[in-house]
Amino acid sequence: MPASPLLLLVPYRYKAAVLYSQIPISASASGDFVVSRAGNTASRILGNGNIETGVLANIARINYPRTGVASGCAGLLVEPAATNFVLNSQNTATDWTIGANTASGYVDVIGVSGNTVTASASGGIGGSVFVRRTLNTALASGSTYTVSFLMRQTGAHTIGGYWIGIAGVGDIGGGFDVSGSFSSGAIYSAAGAINRIRRVERWGTDVYRCSETFTLTASGTLDRMLMGPVAAVNSTASVASGTQMAFAAPQIELGSLPTSFISTVASAVTRNADVITNNQFVIPNLIGAILTEFESPTSGTYFVDNLPVTLVSGYNKVAISYTPTTITVYRNGTQVSGSPFSPPGGVLPILGNVINIGHNNQYYQLGANIRSFVLYSSTLTAAEASGLTT
Image 1 (tube, rainbow, N blue to C red):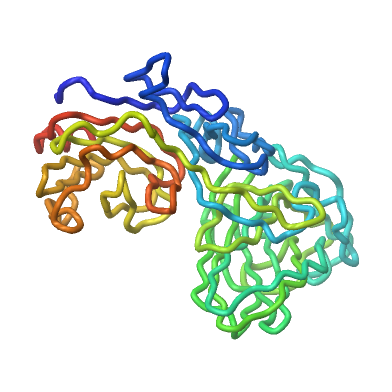
Image 2 (image 1 turned 90 degrees about the vertical axis):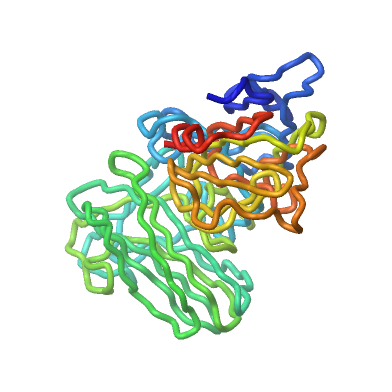
């Protein structure tokens, strides 16, 4: 095992603007992290599995991923800035219109006010829905957007969907089956929307977050969003009278992934980026190791204190050993292909660096839920790196 760490952070204890490290910790907070996020528009998932909105500015978001305590350890939620373009997302009973042949009722969906939609007569997504119109948001050609919402199964029916209208582009819609197969399909396919990717995530016993990402090839104006039960994942076919499903937390944002819920009322709302940094404790030498574990929302290149690391989507345990000329990376028990490699520019820019694990200018990030961050003053052997990340 490596020597005692120079720095150990397991996100848990915090106060306004401070996230406490377990090692070292002092009255001057020299080993602790500064938390910066303007505004009170952020949300997180509590240990009981419910969404808490209105997390205050500069408060570390200790977040239980998906289903709360049952899903395992909490982590530090770190996200870039994002804006929800859907209005009245916090309470869809306000200023949302119920479709023809449809009844609705209030329902709490893991802490967010939603609607239970019931088809009182047969009708597809064009009728058995509730809708928010006059969104009036400009969407740009070449940009990627993500639609997301929570769907609660309130009866035997397992298929629901969404439909958005973009003037100048066309209609885009998707259906999602949460019966276990987690299948999905395109309901409406506008020619101006490409690279469509749909996802279903279980967020509770009967609650699922459904999302779809697409890229526009033409500019347009987001006009409306509808949600409701559908008969099939790729069809507008009618659902039977009495078919029921609940919906909440609608969100449309710029980017290729759904982020945490942003509550809106009469206008679009922006959640600012989480910036988590340590401006006092600097890395003391040119030889050492970083050990960290976190959830990555997607595969790709991430940066751990400006060191590029190739990651997979999902859970990652990563060990990085560094010398002045080489970087060796282990991920989930295995040495990463192409490792060791030379640092960018040929010289490792570590000595004297402050430590950044938040979205400081978008380069210092560890993904969605950070569970731990450890800094050592010596490199790790292959056996140590493999064992510590398995």
